[in-house]
Amino acid sequence: MTEPLSRWSAVETIGRGVQEAPALKSGFWLTLALAMVGALGRVAMPILVQQAIDRGFDGTSIDGITVDVGTVTMLGAIGLAVVLLATACQRMAVARLGYRSEEALYGLRVRLFDHIHRLSIADRRARS
Image (cartoon, one colour):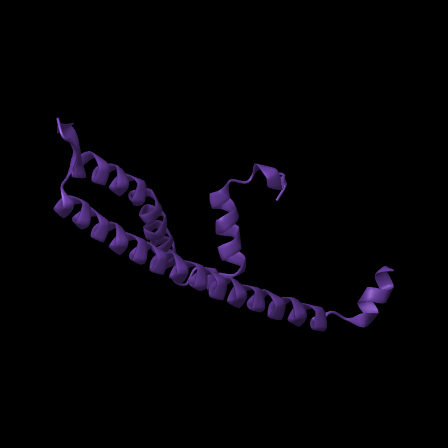
């Protein structure tokens, strides 16, 4: 604990938090996986739009632009499924993280109050 807090890495900080509040460890990997699926859904949407434009529209004809309705519809349906899945996963990850955080804070509060109640009043006055 001699090293300044600003020099701790994010992984070390999470590790210390899990040591102090083991409730955070329960289901950590599932919560992380759900959050990653939600993030991947946000990344996939621009790619799907790009593919719909590249594969669905053809401007090489003399009459103008031709549209491959089947390709655009298929990519639109895939996009809808990706958005729904990503939204559901992100919401579940946030709910799980919130629940575990509250559970961890509750455990820390209980330990703190137990410690405070075990302290002797006479010991406190002797130090002042």
